Image (tube, rainbow, N blue to C red; front, side):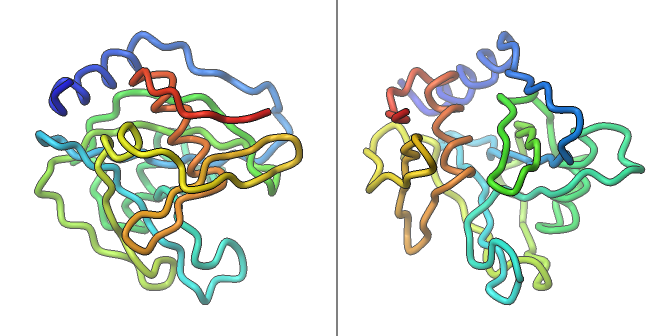
Length: 191
């Protein structure tokens, strides 16, 4: 499968997919942007949270955050947060759709929003929130087995090490579900 076909398959599959909705109206909501570059070898845009933060310090995550009361919807939240964190204007994002919702360890209902961004986009990290922005080829998750697994209760979640970054936890879970559900990967999530 060529990588252009990879991006086309992902977009087509998401357009046909009815995302899992978790019926927990009392949980606070968060939206994250699963930004993917539009190029021959599509790249997944990830961040490393600043080490000085009191929560999730140094962890790899998608740009995103808590939904504000004034946000009209969760897509707006993800785009607003991506602009604040990585200086990505919402006008540069072609929103494809939602992935399956997940609940974070801290009780947030998280909705991943997939958006395609131009390959030449220059990201700038908000130093108050981030230590780094980096990209990982989508094919990396198809061609490489997880380096190890992280245990959360009865669930074993894949963990990857890429160029000095550890991709694990909720971020790895969302990536794994996207790869399995939309790109026919067979990455094990053990229950």
